[in-house]
Length: 88
Image 1 (cartoon, helix red, strand yellow):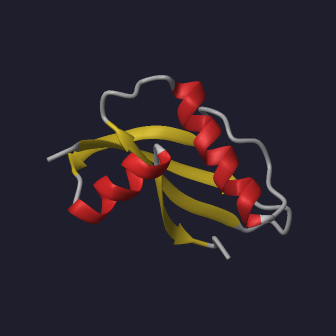
Image 2 (cartoon, one colour; image 1 turned 90 degrees about the vertical axis):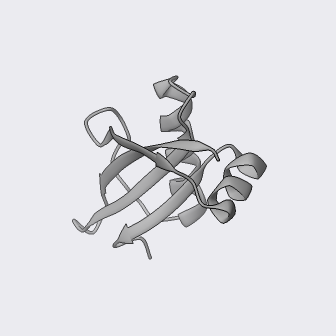
């Protein structure tokens, strides 16, 4: 089973709402710029105006066991986003 690192992320939207989502990556990935780039890629796909994504908005939270579905998504794309609040 794959171990994943969960990066808890809060980004202010242009409409003053705060997006909350988690970026999940393999736990062996420790390059924060790569992790932040995954978050930026996700935000660009959403086409929602937001503030910056830096270590102030995105912080390591914990490591957990990945489900088979999460493993598949991470192996395909390098990361997985779990949307929590104000992501639409």
